[in-house]
Length: 148
Image 1 (spheres, one colour):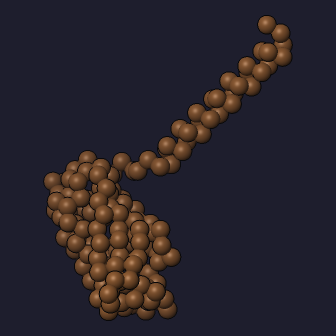
Image 2 (cartoon, one colour):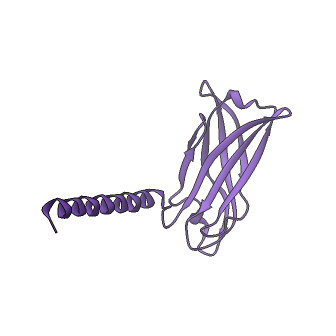
Image 3 (tube, helix red, strand yellow):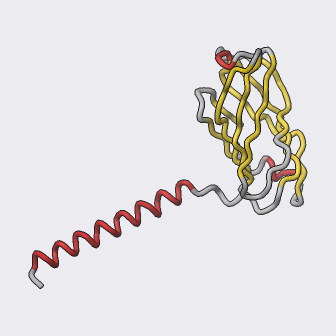
């Protein structure tokens, strides 16, 4: 085998290893944490005099959450409190995503500036009541910030 052929094979091997390493890295960043609840504000949609908030929630822990109710504060675009309400995310099985939607009467989505998860009002699980708030990871795919 000549030196050009060996060099070509070495470059191919390095390229293959690099692409595998990149894929492994991409998987690591997309892997959810081993515990805690992840809540993503996924979409906002005006619905007949109400703003519908769609959330994707996932319990990354190993224990099912039987009931998760979060005290939630809604702020307008100027930062003033619009309302304080409870969002009942119901059951959150271990390692399974759930979509939950909440309609806010007499609220236009364009008026919403931020959403604050103020804490868990109710949390029922086999491990106790802190499972809903420990390791809480919040994100938003909308222009409305989700805080906690």
